[in-house]
View 1 (tube, one colour):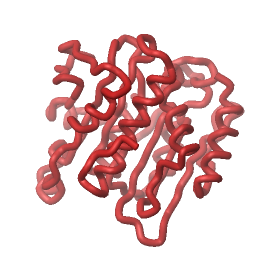
View 2 (cartoon, one colour):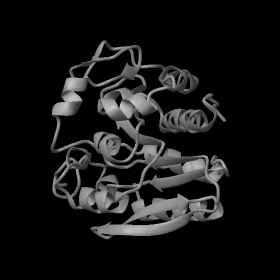
View 3 (tube, helix red, strand yellow):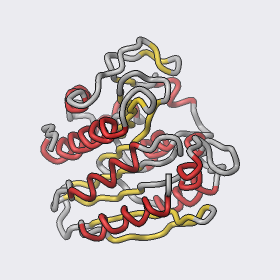
Length: 262
């Protein structure tokens, strides 16, 4: 993929949609960019990211499509990090230029330049919802990881866990574009008809070398979804459409407690 061309298209679409661009670092010849839109009175704050793995192109392309459509509410604050691993995306590799999986490098002492820059940008930001866009090379359908208030320490969970999970409704929205992944186990964890919920003991024992989603849950949001579309088994346009549907559904739910695929 020509990452410079993609970044130019992302910037143009973000500008047209009223987002402000910032650069939170550089990697190789590429900037690490963020787009933010902050209305005067925001009903919710939403975080979207993609491109942590360079061999998963549907996520960045879906964010580009959402920006082109301006599929964003005027009463919501958005933070979008569309390409966290630009060198890997250019090369088509999961890892960064050092051969390291960025999505296992977050935590108290981040171990990649990308994660260090990312965590510095996050600082004390808080979001009502985070969605991390990913793909799975081995999958035949799409699925969803959910990290919810139930996965937080008890004191925090008690005050934030009053809302029902939208996970099943999100899966229904995505299923309009791709089949749900039904294999019973994924990465040694049970798959409940497309919904993945990591065991609590696994989450709480994981201290270092964290995925982005777990770092976000612990420091920046009470609710995080990771989308996974099948990077080998489905056409890119169908994967982009599925990712867009999942993000749209999540964005509507966080404000209205309903799900819409628009």
